[in-house]
Amino acid sequence: MTGKSASEAAAQEAWEEAGVHGTPTAEPLGFYGYDKLRPAGDALPCLVSVYPLRVTGLADRFPERKQRRRKWFDAAKAARKVAEPELRQMLDHLAAPQDALVLRAPVADGA
Image (cartoon, rainbow, N blue to C red; front, side, top):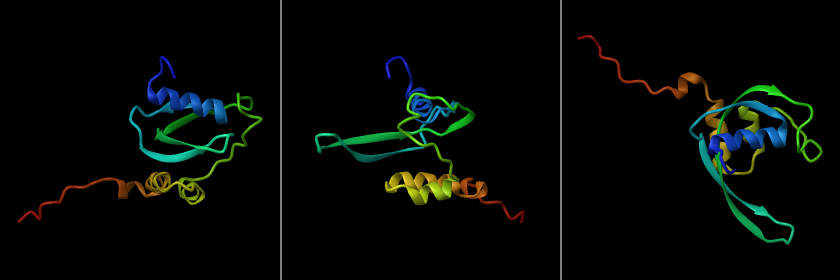
């Protein structure tokens, strides 16, 4: 989107597709690829950047409300519902306990 950073464009897509307002992270969580099927029947390869977004509000009226149904899942359940392995892995990472996400340096034994 002209004039927007990638994370701002992701937030704009969240608004248009689901009526979600929020603040995205500046860095992507990761990337995944898929083939978008077009009306002519051919496939267009797509690479998607995934940006976590801290939700601050939801709107009942948003641009694509007649084309989509908004439904919320925790990250673990969302991971089970997606077909793309790379996206599933990102969602599984978000579902992991916070302690599992922190890398810790070995602790000296004090001897």
